[in-house]
Length: 245
Image 1 (tube, rainbow, N blue to C red):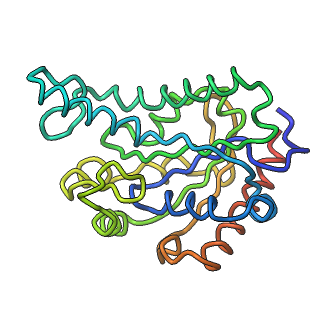
Image 2: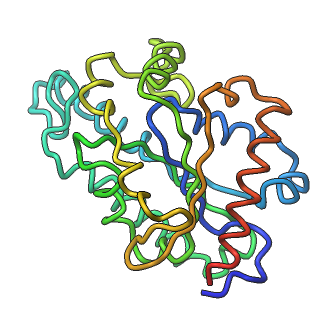
Image 3: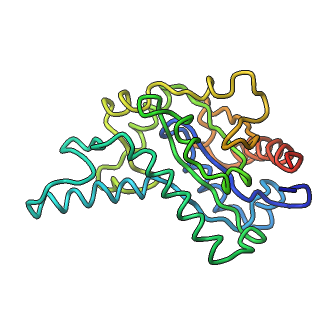
């Protein structure tokens, strides 16, 4: 696919450990006027595909089933998935939602970017397993922004953001320390990019990526500091994206 003439990303994949700053970046993009957003970040109008609302629906449904005296169908009483393949299902759901969008509007990307967001740990297959389930249709249009934080920083921010009154909130949900450790303590991102400084293969497609270092939590600071770093990283990524025909 020739991307040399496009002005905005078609699909941007935003991935990281939990609480690394993904949602703060999306909030910053939403709060940036569209013309400025195109100029600085090569993102115009955009929609999000985030697997968190999908999996949270499973928790809610299981809560309702328990209240009605029926067996839970997605998770156990501790909120763990009943089946490991449910992680794959979430990615396949993202594929399906995207396919419906471009089915209903074939020229969708002439005016829209999709931002896909998820986190993965090696205990459930890592990003490598998730990438195996991303469709080629998505991979052909994809660029990746990876937010880099340590496990300790991910844990700290997960604790800080959690609002028990809004466990379903994109910006305020959180996990217990035990679940964070069992699910997300180790990441396979460095293993995936080893020896591949600019692109990684997904469905046989070389997909460009850049790494956004968020060790200083610039995403929580916001403002010009975040805007400047995000512009720098997305400009670099967009140059790779357009030349990666």
